[in-house]
Image (cartoon, rainbow, N blue to C red; front, side):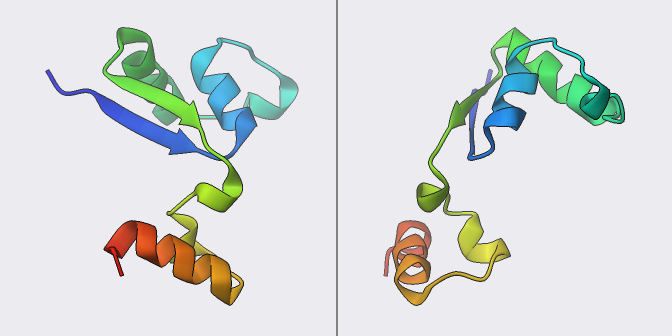
Length: 79
């Protein structure tokens, strides 16, 4: 049994994965969310909120100020 921790900086994503709330804005979400939510409910995946400035994935996906780029690169690569 493997437990996976997911760190997300979007509080809306954290909320809809933990609670079965449906809104007009979320009606377009497909079965991927429901599949993911099943893993959250079973405890195989836990989702945790993380501050946007601490999200290492942004190093790979966004244009960042140099200081933040260096900080996140260090978190991922260790240098």
